[in-house]
Image (cartoon, rainbow, N blue to C red):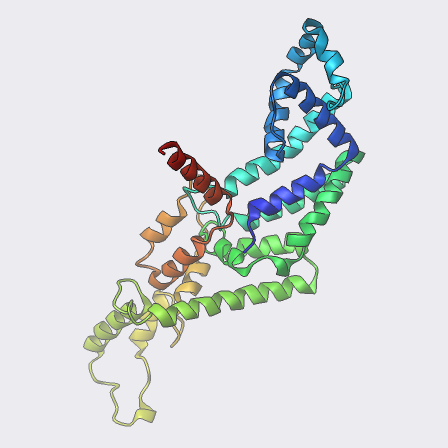
Length: 342
């Protein structure tokens, strides 16, 4: 799976290749470097511009206080003094940067699950770029066009997104399959490819669940709340009340379940002689109310007895890292600590 933070970085960098954006940032950065060196990565550029805009009046006053400020900025390697137009472009860029800066922070978290967030964030980027492409601001429109080209290279097609990210959305009890199909329709609706992909996701999800059922089903047979244990309780209670009235010697003449057993299975989620799987029960239940501080791991922990096999599948799917950025930064931090102790 590709690192999402890296792809976001590539998309944003392509949006900054416009002449006006480059010159505006360059002149403001030059003004800041004159006072204090400034980094050049796009996320640092966002923080730099956000701070610089709040201090615009100070920059204007500094031009009157330090006579060398204006003269030096007109020489190489600087690009001149920031103009009023530069400051206006910077405000637009800060609004533009803020979406991607916050997105990068969200998907780079280390203390919470991120795999269930990725597809939603990808959808937000797609819709945001579409909005900018319809903007009357020619330069913003051009930035969005360049970013959309890079975006399409990695996420433009529904088949290019790793299937595990779809499963992570479904295993979020606030979303489930209904949310995924809603986003498919919104982004790719009206195409045959959309319907085909819905079917592939459903089939793949059931196939993955069946793999987990084969792996863990026999060990969880006695777990309270599991399909196996539920049926065994139904079977024992029903057989005691009905007795041996239906235990015929001829196997062909024997029904699989008594009417009481069938009714008990119907009440617990089964229909006729077929009991719903954990996955089917989970998908048929209402979604959880959406709240930002929802603890998805705790939800699966609390509901482990109801979904013993599915909870193991959720544990593995939700543990998939979607960005290497946080691990790289933690590794660098550790190296610096070790060097500091030498």
